[in-house]
Image 1 (cartoon, rainbow, N blue to C red):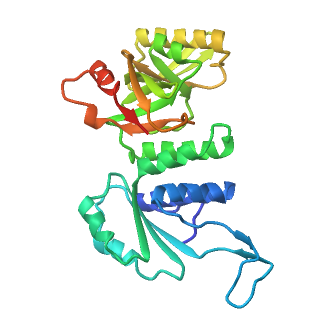
Image 2 (cartoon, helix red, strand yellow; image 1 turned 180 degrees about the horizontal axis):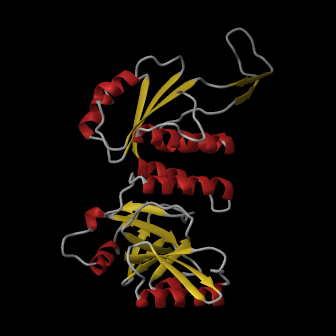
Image 3 (cartoon, helix red, strand yellow; image 1 turned 90 degrees about the vertical axis):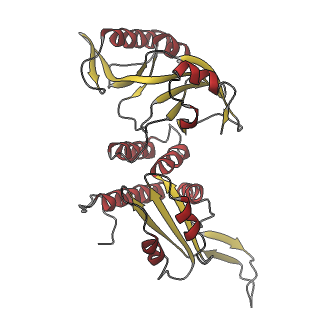
Length: 325
């Protein structure tokens, strides 16, 4: 079974995940070959040629044709591991039997690949270019490639990220989700919550950083996740954290909804909105080092800054003199 199907036929988890990845990449290619090229180059750290090349008056060995349209031959093989360890012999076999052209092997794993194995594999002949990445990195790169206004492809990307989260392919512990908040910044701070449409995909995370003016200004640890919707007879709540929704959380969400509707013109009655609630938000100044702002969410592993016995307030102070890209 070699064709990539819209509806997968596999029973094995790894084959199912691979089919989903290939389907995502094929949809991105249909949307824009250039965008797929950008994504693969970022993931693999290599210049992988995708699409046609148009040239004029290019000198060949015996002539100079007026125009040339060409496409460079290449093969990219993908190996995914959801739970089991990487097998060196299996990867070596994948490196055999390539057709003519540039040769690439992309290995996608749940956790970072073993450094010793990576070192050994990278000693293979140079004609095989091998790259390793995690599912999280794949999700981050694909998410960063598209803007919010590219609705058709963003729906597909968000659903893929949610799929990876549902399949427990993404880490949560020690992950900071940085979210850009301009007009809602003050309301987020006052009501101790952050929100977005309930059907938007996102990666698992423990912490949220509220971003404004090239820096994370507030940080909090997620305590409760609630979906809420305004209805004629009041606000309807659905807890995603298990159990009922505490009255204090209901009060914060109700205040956020009323303020956002009155001051920002937001509408919470058409669809459910997902609220990430915090016991407290602490001021910090975790600055973005690189130029420009951020188009969407960023995920950063801050495990190295999380120490036993330290509070979120301690973390906010510690990050105040740190930078990120």
